[in-house]
Length: 164
Image 1 (cartoon, rainbow, N blue to C red):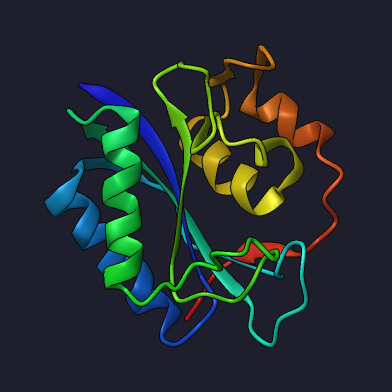
Image 2 (cartoon, helix red, strand yellow):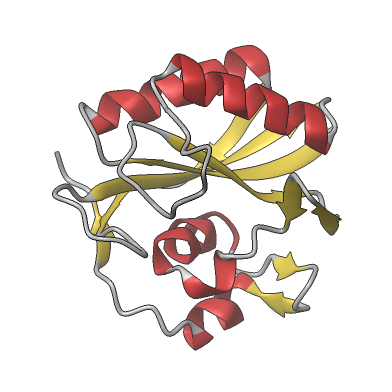
């Protein structure tokens, strides 16, 4: 089994329900969620938006390879109402976003997939829930623990536990 860490995010519609539906679909299509972080609320990163994000990191065990995983994630996002900007004009609000953070300790650099996710060291909304699951996990590209990367992160945007 492969161990995968996924970041779930939503800032449109019923954000909590979107995270729950994505977890349900992940279990049905990808594999077993073996751990999940608390849910955090954060300011949008990289763009201005009217609504805050809810984010959560889940640890999943899957028999899929990285490219099969990506294909299933894209299907889940589409089924939950995500319309990707085909022109790549930057970040936008969205009902669901699922990012592959880690796939085992593999490093993949492909035109359609980069693992570990390149934004990990710059985004506190990713690091905080990830550190809740495993602060000592070593990033295979940086050879530093998540805790060390978190302590070096320059992101000043607010991230705090979500209380509905």
